Length: 64
Image 1 (tube, rainbow, N blue to C red):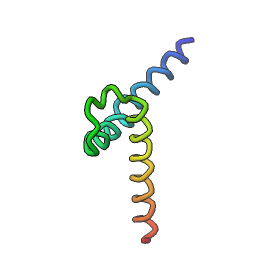
Image 2: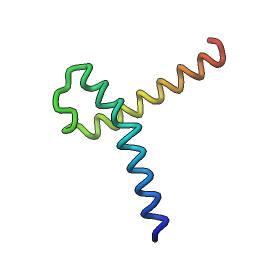
Image 3: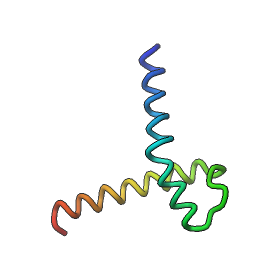
Image 4: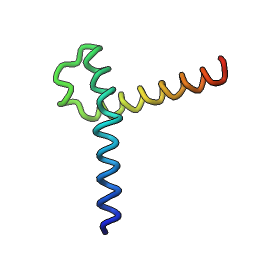
């Protein structure tokens, strides 16, 4: 049971501190106020942000 709690803590920490901050920043840039009220939008926007960042690094490495 302790392993489940540890995995849940790590997952929550990763989502809250790595994925959602760029999502909130992007939402703020496009004019969404009170981004803390739009947690699902921040999550999906953050995922899209990191997917785009990985794609750009991949394209840079391949020399596109």
